[in-house]
Image (cartoon, rainbow, N blue to C red; front, top):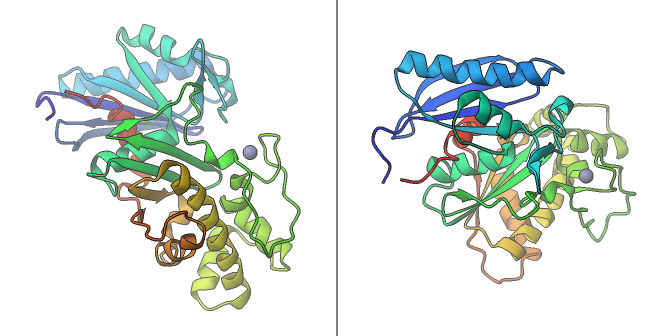
Length: 305
Ligand SMILES: [Zn+2]
């Protein structure tokens, strides 16, 4: 299916580091590099990407396609960056400037879309027609992949379910928390790591980080177990909305909270109550590629031929 000589270079442009992976035609990473992201300096960021790509190509003695994953999206029309937490990228024509620097066409996508693509091509969603990838970390991001291609959407926000309001469970009487996006009670405010921590504290628990709550729950702590239970019910209800709209074959979880083993058992049982079908074939899976998903997915943005 793929051109055997094809070299695909993926760049994961994060807030603290820029990662590069070069994949051969079989998806094997033949080279990896990383360097710190120049803080607050847009021109230096473009130059760092250019240098990383050229360095990789010199080492490998081949030219590749280039895909970039960013924590943000291209605003349409015009393609200037929006919604980026690396604020020096905002309102910059990033893809165009990298193209000028590297003298070739470059593809760019949101990092959650890259995660979903990586898992759809050769990860937990391999072979599935529709994959919904979710990152449950310091924030909540998600992406949709259909037949191994990212569904971007006309506004470039397809999959931004993290900023839908979470429908509260019928027995919950909590006031929604403000989200950094300016809205109230977004899915992210409940299902991110800080969201889990805030909920534990609001229910009379200690001030703990999400991973500490998960560890205590696994060790039999009743309050932590209750917090995880509330989290699971919310996650199930939030994902049920995705299933009712998109009806994906597979939902893949990534980010720190994807390591909680019990979610893969509890959540698919809990979502049955909210999904408009007596039988639910959608699978909930843990990611295969872990932290490499972003950079691998960026490389797979060139995914034809
Ligand atoms: Zn929000």
